[in-house]
Image (cartoon, rainbow, N blue to C red; front, side, top):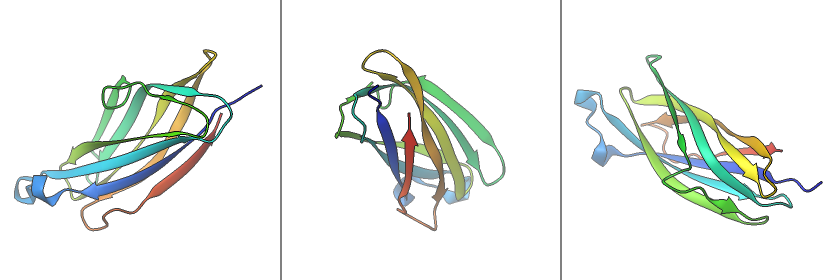
Length: 132
């Protein structure tokens, strides 16, 4: 049976021009590329994030699609988007998963691996390989 094989590459960035450390506002962007290396198209339907700052404050974020879209990713293709998060500390983490659906209607999760948001360590890529 044909299967999608999705992987995520994440590149986080600190945004000093949008941050105010004196007011405990640290802004970050992250660019995620979702690649389909399998043999079946998959659609990203929803997302779930767990965002933690260095003080242990945790926020859960759930929603439909990514950046207002529910991209269909054919085999051999990828979809990239950039989004952002604000923390009350200079560092923290994000992780989560995408709810996806195969082109024949089977749901599956694609893991978004834990990655670090750190005002001191900018732009280090994080990769995952999730087989479903």
